[in-house]
Length: 439
Image (cartoon, rainbow, N blue to C red; front, side):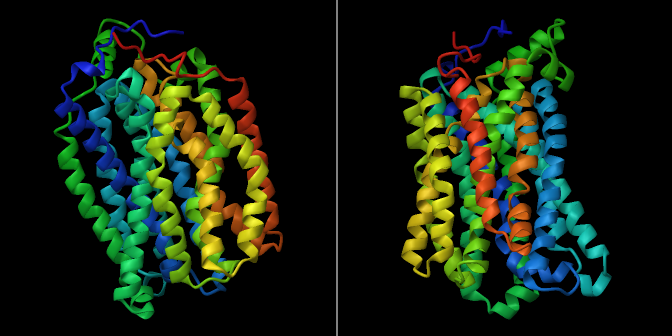
């Protein structure tokens, strides 16, 4: 089904307006993901505060389970706020998502410990993560669609790559806050109360971003889709998505599965792997992953711009092939090294491979759907795959480790990347077959 909705080219926005819009959308995405990843970055310090006594791996496993459960809300958030962003506008969806993230961060910052309230503590932690999952589920579709629609035809790959630049920046900022606190506070202070600080920071930043997003301009695609809906045209909805666009929706699920698993493994789980398996100190593991993620962030726009020249498909296929060939050797090498330099190079090589997915996946998904259902089409299938594979990465990895078969996890990653590779090979190149039109 093609999109017959007339659209005004993004070039009709003046340069200042487009720059302000992309900056505003990106800044909000950064804060959303900072709040989301602060949980993962500080798990080593607060897990003992919310769960009963047990060994370190068990507590991390319990905290990872809450992290995974937060992902369960992402399809719900993607469904509700994807429809909201399609019907009310991308700007409205962006404002709502950051408001929910603020609530979740404050809940964790003020949460009582297990010693003071018993099982109510992990219940509050779970509630906060579910709210944050709802927020992130809606953020992805709204921001990916907004950035893609604000970019011109020849620059969609470049500008949409900033979604992962800011996503990674959020994670990097979380790690930087961790490094600063590790150097300013004692380990005892971090375990006792220092871990609450980044959640307060995240809530404050969310308030600032809410104010910024209220001043953004709406995309022309969203305006035209709303006008067509008022005249009796198609409206966004899950039934509309899966009955009228089933091939595109399934394609998003399959192209995301291996990519999101690899991304979450190399960026979120890697810090814990370096501590629990490689044997590095917490501070050393944090510094290694932070340095690798910083370079990972910088190369996103270059790969996005490359996709504007050669197409999206060759880049995704490259990720699939290299991921299948090198994931197992990279993790085996990391597990056997005691050199921070070697560990950094191995981490960086893995992230370089994953860039073939992260830099362009947002624009690929947006180009698969017409305007009236684009935010939902980008968000919901992605959230389903992310919940099943990305959100469970730490849980599966720690479960295999707890069972004494940690290497099984690496085979699992390789298999899932292989399934996504099959999708990349047989799908059309969205750059040449985009449903985003420029008049």
